[in-house]
Length: 152
Image (tube, rainbow, N blue to C red; front, side):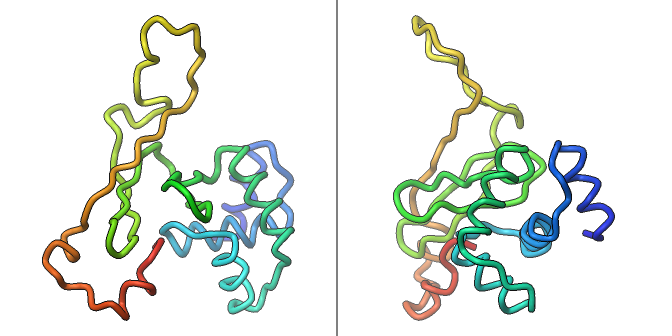
């Protein structure tokens, strides 16, 4: 995504288009997949645009709050983030840890009906599917590949 497009998306979401927000948002848009803050800090450093861990946490929080990023709720452990245009759920492989996007029935929040009989205002519902991905079911993931594929 071009810098002008990034700045426009940030402004349209009610955020100032700072260098830090542009760097993190652009990285997630270009890289795709699901990344932790530590992943982002490392990728930014590799790209020659290092940011502190606290700055990345703050930026991810701002971008998530503005609806530009989605926190991929994959259960306990590191929070993972992605740039996504559509609401969806996730499948997590119990063997290799790969995270795969799963479309939801409605493609909009909350996706699920509010449980009957409860006086709640639900604005988000996340479903986490767990099991074995096709490669693990087939035994195709050698142990050394598993750690490099985790959370992508």
